[in-house]
Image (cartoon, rainbow, N blue to C red):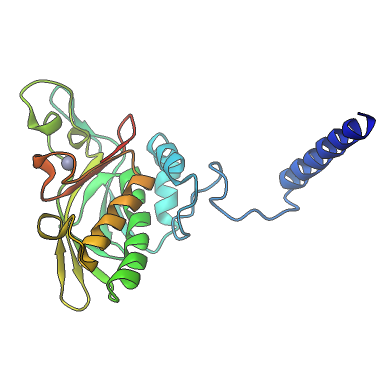
Amino acid sequence: MKRFRRLVLFALLALVAAGGALYEGWIRVPPDLFPWGPVMLDRKPGWFANIQLNGLSTDGAACRAALGRTAMKFSVMADRKIGEDCGFTNVVRADATSIAMSPRPVATCAMTAGLYWWQQRLDAIAQAELHSRVVRIDQLGTYACRNINSAAEGRRSQHATANAIDIAAFHLADGRVISVLKDYGKPTPEGRFLDAAHDEACGLFNIVLGPDYNRLHANHFHLDLGGFRFCR
Ligand SMILES: [Zn+2]
């Protein structure tokens, strides 16, 4: 029992020492290892990537700073209030990203940060599964003043605040085009690429919906940073 107590005491002391060393900056912690501190989007997204993106959602200045540390080019757009519960704040236009997006998306800063991370992962998956690189992503839209599933009644979609994006297809350097509509769910390299792309998105964004969710998503992946998490 005495030995056990000594062990606990030792563990506690070691913890305090490690904490102190961290606080004093004696131990160098790799960026993005913890959910606090500046978000480094050029590094591979870590365990807390989703928490970090949600943090950027609530801190526009930190989010723009995170984008500013990357190689991407972006323009800060003016806030807009459109109608009763549509419009946006903290929105940027991604002018030049590691993988070109067509058309250039105008979305919340946090969504843009998430897309930047996702693009890096897509490139890694494409090289492993398809032995090529993704050179362009086709998107169907970010902002639309509408309800979820375009229903006449109900809650507003995250698209109503430009906090979402619909992704339709991926163009590869070797000329192939992989579309969610044609290739999703197939036991082909293209199908596996889409599966992995969907999985990676689920680790980053709050809500990810694809063809498995419903017929409205047969031709695209919906990604958003809304209030709860769901992946299908
Ligand atoms: Zn959508």
